[in-house]
Amino acid sequence: MLEVTCTHPDAKSYYRIEQFLQLTEEDIERYRQHLICPVCHGKAYFRKQSVNGRSACFGSNYHASDCGNWHPTLKTQQQKEIEALNQQLAESDELIFDFVIPANSKKEDEPRRDSLKGKQSQERVLRSTKTPSEKLISKDDTTVNASRRPEVLTPDKMLNNLLHGGELAKSETRIVLKLGNKDYSYKAKNLLVNFASAEPAKNFEEAKLKMYWGTVSHTDKDFEWLNPADCDDVGIPLGKAKEAIINQYGITSRDELEGAGILFLGLCFWNKDKTRKIVKIQAADKLYLSLLGDGRVN
Image 1 (cartoon, rainbow, N blue to C red):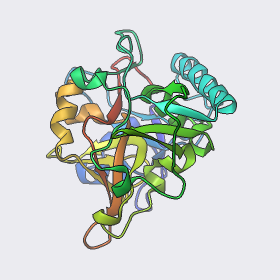
Image 2 (cartoon, rainbow, N blue to C red):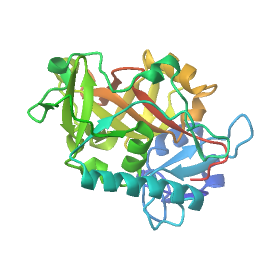
Image 3 (tube, rainbow, N blue to C red):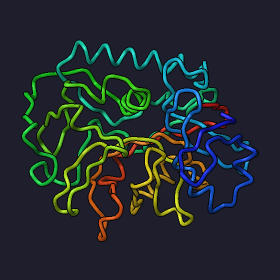
Image 4 (spheres, helix red, strand yellow):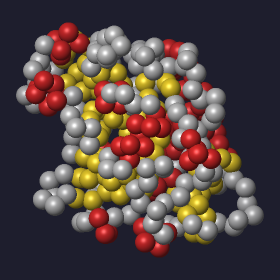
């Protein structure tokens, strides 16, 4: 996208990319989490010019199905996946969540590029570093009969459905997670949380594990925090996940994360002053990024 609408009270309501680039660096940082598609009003992001010559641009992972700014090739591919998963949800009571990324997911001619997670990609189910009783279990959880074999849901299909308004985010279908030696079932609508809808616990100790998802707007200058495009009141400290992201996805510049879709197991709680929501990545190997390829126009 070369045009965008800005909702920040101190900004102009509309910018072309060349106008946005003329702003001071400080104003760009202030406004970039307040951008929306001028056609469908889906949340948008700003990408700087890359070191390999990619032009600066705007983009969105949330285009409506009838939005003319949704790239046609990408739209066709993603809508097929969305419809397929929606059909699975309609026909299934539960799905197994599998964090393995398909081996053929990285192709030079695909708009998005994904990365395998090395030896960690061989793990077949989501697993937390906390025991179920400590973090995840709620009144909604039930133990699953181990003899049952629900259909498998992978992170790329999950994130695509969530980003583009599929049925998963509001589904009653249960998502089966393997935690320790037990399988637990959690309603999709209660497990999956967009950053803008994150509800913080009073502190880290009281936080419950959820699957958080959304779009990365940008990182801080030291590449220690992620800032979502979905809202401006959430901060995601990278911590130990920083090295894992760099190694697993071949990140050479923090700007490569701008506009990336993201999904991870995490905890949400207030910062000390209760002025900002913190969403902590709970397991570095349970994080999925859908990076933007250089050929992509979104």
